Amino acid sequence: MAKLYFYYGAMGSSKSANALMAEYNYRERGQKVLLAKTNIDTRDGKNIIRSRIGLQRECLLLTDVCAMPEEEIAAYDCVIIDEIQFAEPEQCDFLAHIADDLDVPVITYGLRTDFQLHFFEGSRRMMELADVIHEVKTICWCGKKATCNARYNARGIVRSGAQIMLGANDEYIALCRKHFLEGKLNADDPGDRNR
Image 1 (cartoon, rainbow, N blue to C red):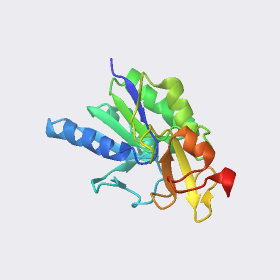
Image 2 (cartoon, rainbow, N blue to C red; image 1 turned 90 degrees about the vertical axis):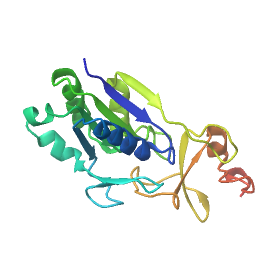
Image 3 (cartoon, rainbow, N blue to C red; image 1 turned 180 degrees about the vertical axis):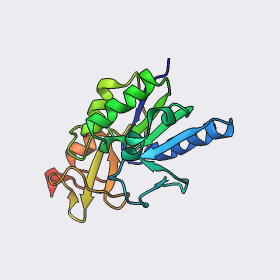
């Protein structure tokens, strides 16, 4: 029986690179892979998944996958979805249907929480549904495991605002919980408490 996988990690943990490597490994073995991302992620183009290390590949959008005839989806050996945190709960339910009823493994990648440590809708639903949940690890500037996605600007860590704001290394940094709560972006930063 196929499984539904959720690989989550903080910003910069190579989730997109892992998605692209998994897709490549399936293709290299002659398998047919459906690669997609959620519609909100348009940073690198509408139909492109790009990793920070330069890997990239054309993809479909999750809305297109959800609109495909089931017999077409069932012809794939694997479905891989990037940026799952932006998915609607119903889309996550459909991915579970693909694994359960069409017997096609579904591998998803995304953030677990936002810049305020609140679940994204898609991530929450994946935590509820996934058969396998695995953390893709990265580290804070101090060397400890990073679990928090800090949004920042020239004044330091941003603590309020819209949940979704697309950005990269120039607006987000992965931090351990201690340095996230202290507001320390690096060793020389006095943090929120001392500004």
